[in-house]
Structure formats: structure tokens, C-alpha cells
View (spheres, rainbow, N blue to C red):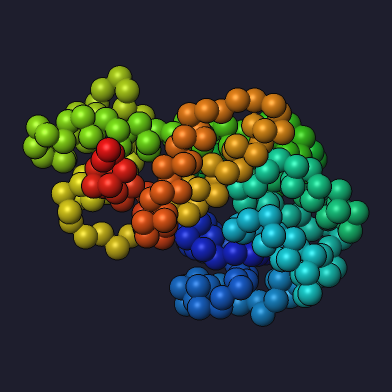
Length: 296
């Protein structure tokens, strides 16, 4: 099976590296060619346009920034939809509103291809190890065609319903995590006067009843940030968090659901972005809160 990846950002590179390591023939496209170079250097084949990518493979995995990017890459000039699509399968992994996935599926399937959404839970580390959780929306028939492939990317492949259901599940899974960044920062502000070593603080919190799995995964980076140690690694930046929270709130609005804590967390994230940390790793957010956000 020849696999294509459209969008070689952090997650695209991690998933691509995983697939190359398993011996798959991989073709890649990215708006900025330089960002695909690590995969090309590792053995992937470069496609100059999305259309050329789709022409060369059996399955296309797309990991794109937002709905506008999805529209452009699929249906713009030299887009994926202009290739010969009969019998191919598209796996759309971007984090977008459910309505976008519901809209995309019939448009792609009308061209003779299968279409699944499979947004994932997990970041770069789990992606490199094939330990993501995938939330699949689409038909069982299309899932059957690519289940073995998804199982090499995800430790759990969870079919959750029709197109749009995967996006709903992804937003629901990520929402407590987004709000937790705010509550963690506020908790740290209470114990800051104690002067306890940041690594001890993170260890205590992660071992407590209120410590989510996120602290076990990102605790080291959080402790480094709190200690003022430099770390250039960016797993998920604040800009991505803000985008995802806005998508969550938009979905809540469409369902007429009140989400007051989520709205308040977004307001704080917006302040932090205004202060210049939008491109920084999310582990820098508690540092910003202690230095600026918590001050009255």
C-alpha cells in the first residue's frame, strides 16, 4: 500500500517517520517544502502538488491547520480532488468542527474515493511510537480498508459513528485538557510562595488524585519551564490550543450548550498570546500565568 501525507507539520512528520520505520512507501506534500525535507531525507518521496500526491498513492492522510487549509488542499488549484480518485481512501486527521467533516465526506466520495475522519488524541511522542488514539467517523466498509494501517499509527482505533462523530469526540476529549492548563496554572500560583522545587511540585501533583495523565507525559517540560531552564522543543503551541478551544466553543454554541469555564480559559489564553507566547510550547503557559496572568 502506497501512503501519502498531506501536511508535514509536527504530527505529520511524526506519523510519517513511524510509517517509514515500518517499511511503508511514503509520499509527502507540504505547503512549505522545507518542512517535508526531514521525511524526504529519511526516504519519503516528494510530491510537488496535492494532486500529484494523490495520483501516486492508495491512501492519503491529511493533517492540516484549519478548515480553510482543508478546502484549499482538497479543492483548490492542483488540489487532491483533481487526481484520479477511484478506489482511493482519504483519512482526514485535522482538528476541525464536525460540520466540516460532514460537508467534506459527500464531496470526496462523489469523486469515487472513500473518506474517513480520524482526528487523534496524543501528541508528537505517542505519534512516533504508534500510540495515538484515533476517533473514526465514517462507514465500516471504508474503515475496513485502512484499519490495519490505522492500527500501526494508533494504539486504539475507535469507530464512534458517522462523519462528524470523530471530530465531536476529539473536541470532547481535548476540552478537559485545555481547561486543566488554566487550573494547573492557578494551583501553582497558590504554592509559589512555598519555594518548593518545581520537579517536586510536578511529581506531587502528578501522583495526586487530581493529576491527569498529561502531567505524567509533559511533567518534565513543565518543571523545566518553571525552573527557568531553556527548552526549544515545541510539542503543542499556544496558538494551536487557542484554535482548538475556539472550535470547542463554536460546537457548544451550535448545540446551545453553556461552556463558561472553557470561555474563561480562552480569555486567559488570548491574553497570553497578546503577551507574545503564542508560538511557545504549552508548558510555558503556567510560567506566563505566574509572572503576569495571576497578578491583580
